[in-house]
Amino acid sequence: MLERYGHGGDLRTAEETYGFPARQFIDFSSNMNPFGPPEGVKRVLLQYAEQIDRYPDPAVRGLRAKLAQLHRVDEQSILIGNGAAELIDLVVRAIKPTMTALAYPCFTEYGDAIIKAGGSITPVMLSPENDFALTESMLAECNARFYMFGSPNNPTGQLVDPTLIMKLVYRGATVVVDEAFMDFIPEEEKFTLIREAAVNERLFVIRSMTKFYAIPGIRLGYMVGAPQQITALRKLQVPWSVNSLAQLIGEAVLDEQEYAARTMEWLKDERPWLIGRLEELGLRVIPGAVNYLLVQLPERPGLTAASLQYEMGRMGVLIRDASHFIGLDDSYCRFAIKLRHQNKWLLQALERGLSKFQEAGIR
Image (cartoon, rainbow, N blue to C red):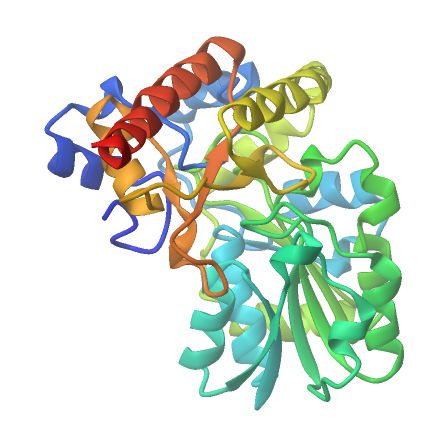
């Protein structure tokens, strides 16, 4: 099982499972920008040796200032963290909710953070018949005082209607919105709740900087909330949580306007192209909105997400077995969207892998 530690992108486990060196895999299990890090990251790395003997800024002032300007919010509304995962854990520890509503399937670390903090979970099960979209009717009978949503949601790729979230806030609930993949949305301004979070004590928005800028090895994310809430969270944060290299890279990538435009142009064309090819192979594609696709496999003897993952791994192509997400069965996989030549490799491996199960059924 490639998801031994609960995530995609585990190349060390892939090496141990299939016996290939990491560089020989094409990894569709991890949802990173396929262009790789922008040029600004390389420049920072080349210069960093001259600064490694200095302490990082404990207040992360340079990056906070740039993010505040980008989102047009107060700097005091921003908290930088060691990836979105740290901030998810931090906000749960700070609020200590006794009962939290989670819409399944969703990012596994939401539930992990809640359980570690001693809380309980009220499940809101998203429906495959409704393409896993969250609707107001699903929340009508939910009386939780704390909610966590992914928008876009992982693994479904579905956005959550911002008005639905604000209705929960207005009726007195506290809501955390994980917008880790929001950078990939062309109409980001229509869906993000960053500016609302900056002035509302019951709303928090978490962003990742590692997905869009392809820097997962540098743990970097940020949270936006009302200044008094952010101050309280900062007091609970581990000192020196964000190292100086991460801070410098974060500042550098925000200047990469050409890189961002190229990414959006690529996704606009590549996403519908890949969806069409996957549907031609008989897969059902869930209509999400980002740089990954949740798909349902056709019914064939012996064909499951795990068995297909193993067959494709033997061909050097890694995919995510999505059955490990609560609310999905063993017919669901998740694929990152990559560059055209890489996506063709995915399709070729899929066709070969699927044909093995078709042949098994005939025999």
